[in-house]
Length: 93
Image (cartoon, rainbow, N blue to C red; front, side, top):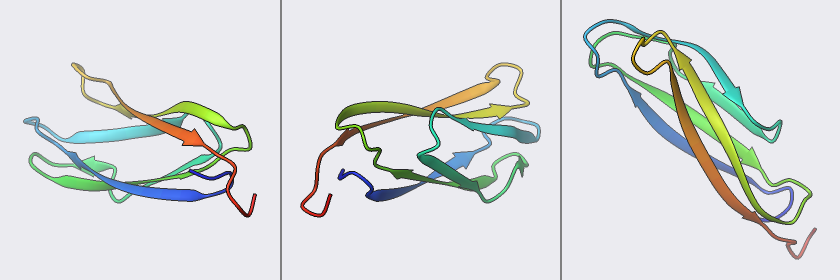
């Protein structure tokens, strides 16, 4: 990934539980990550779409960042997505 380059990924969030799943908060470890969730309350079997956008930082090299979904699930209150990237200087950087 080049410095300043933006990448997008869309993930499915599936409620496999028996009750409603409420995503109370989405936390990221960097301002370089933006998120958009299609729905915060999911009934049993329902899917929401999570779009994650990351922009390459000005620091070269490998980076690891996370996106955490804080939920009402008493057995799994936080789901963590880990992002790995290697930031390089592109031709236009």
